[in-house]
Image (cartoon, rainbow, N blue to C red):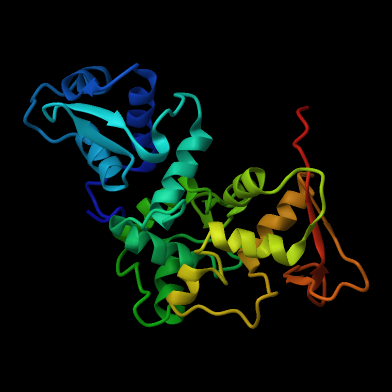
Length: 288
């Protein structure tokens, strides 16, 4: 069942189910899960949100039935999940959807991946979206075979999934709009793979982000759908936005050496030309 189609629950509802499973010491009976999470549902034959959440987790390789088929347990990247670790839940969802950590991309997430690729070609510095805007623009600029939003029914599920994956966010300045802000996913990837305090070659960091977030422009999934950048050193606007935000929030330092041979080229609306960056340093966040 495709993740952007009903009756697949939104990720927030799936998180509630995953968190409940994580809080238990072993397999959880389906009837027990329903009793705690959906006490209002008295008809045991009715397929409820909990049922669809479990089915979605199973399709992503993150939960499975055990015993006689009535008990459930978290598996894959969610095995051992702490019930308070939402960031780990985000990373596990992202790995399953994008096919990271040696996994094949989930077939149920094909439309979601195509939607993410299109979204991340847009400009969060200047653009925000609701369905009417998407309907007019997406039809024009999506390559052949990449069209996802044939009607508005998939738009709300998409924005919820993108936010849960750290690859999108509600617009902070305009109500009911979405921006392709991938800052959270970028921050999590760098926290996991880039040592703090040591300057790293900016092109190496760029390739690292594209490897772990292949829906970004320049990533394998994006390129396979026909989206291309002028060259390997060009940073798309969505990723430029995330890196600039990281610098503003002081968990990234971006520097440019005058004699650097392969600086990356960032989009910066406050400059008349590209911003060049030759090294990137991750800083440990400061708790205030």
